[in-house]
Image (cartoon, helix red, strand yellow):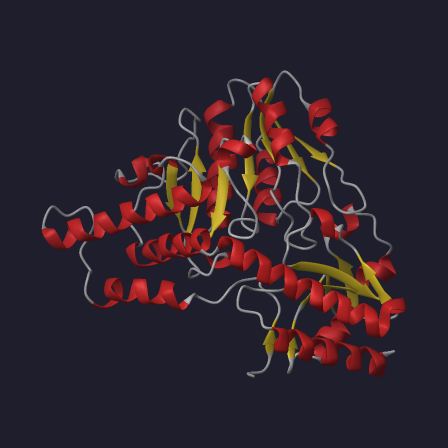
Amino acid sequence: MEKPIYLDYNATTPVDPEVAKEMIPYIESFYGNPSSSYSLGRSNKEAVEKARAQVAELINCKPEEIIFTSCATESNNLAINGNAMANSNKGRHIITSEIEHPAVTEVCKYLSSQGFEITYLSVDQYGRVDPKDVENAIRKDTILITIMHANNEVGTIQPIQEIGSIARKQNIVFHTDASQSVGKIETDVNKLGVDLLTIAGHKLYAPKGIGALYIRKGTQIENLMHGAGQEKGIRPGTENVIHTVGLGKACEVALRDFKQNQQNIQVSRDRLLNGLVSLIGNQVHVNCNLENCLPNTLSVAFENISAHALASFISNDVLISTGSACHSGETTISSVLQAMKLDFRTAAATVRISTGKHTTKEEIDFAIEVIVNAIKKLT
């Protein structure tokens, strides 16, 4: 068993071997520009369109509704800023939540400086938005609702389908950042009722540097970049064929192995929690509601333990992340944990442990042993 054991899959995933294999020909041989008319270019254009269809199948949309981007951050910017610019004549009010990723909140902050008004909805103790709060926040000038599908820190799954129904009745564009949910839970754009959906390749066992944005037909988006006509002119620039092929294959694999992978990540997560509780149950505080949570995600605080001290202490053996940042001896709690109103001590003791589709029982059992031994030494 190789060390350290990686249990931070919500941060990023390794490239799946099948994905890497699919990319190799486009690294070694197929270097043509997809916009070229000769065969070398046409083969790459076909590869891009194949990938588009593979992504579309995973989220149940039409291939022409998929736009490739460089990452989830770009997709979020294109969705939120692009929609705001295209519809500013209809209104300048946007609804979001307090637990969004910075790739959403920073865009909203920018739009606020440009004369838009942003409503930030609060969440409950588990980080869940109440659909009634969304409905109550809607105004005549509301042009966009953007709520993430599942939270990256604590794993809470949002009531997107209910919010989508509200948005549809009010004829308001609805965007969700599905970076953490695609491949882990069902992400069907029609069932969810969303008009815009963000995908991050590197959360899905594809390489870093590739993402996608689903744009429902008829949804108005003003492009943020200007150039030639690639990606319907919405995201111009010579296509990143290599990574696009990788994202397409990753989506194909995710759909093919969905049930198997979902079962493995949940079994691994639950085995970890049960092991910790059986050994140090009085010190374990679970922050998330596991019945409404990503199957691979465990946000947990260990009483009287510094999350940073723990993560650092075990880093040679097990890799996890914390719910706070430490700079010059001062601890800053994440905005998500603040929004959930966790007390400072609990938040500062919070770690996020996230399993992957290749996580083994042996790795989990080793991680339990390492974490428990570290807690005993740090207490």
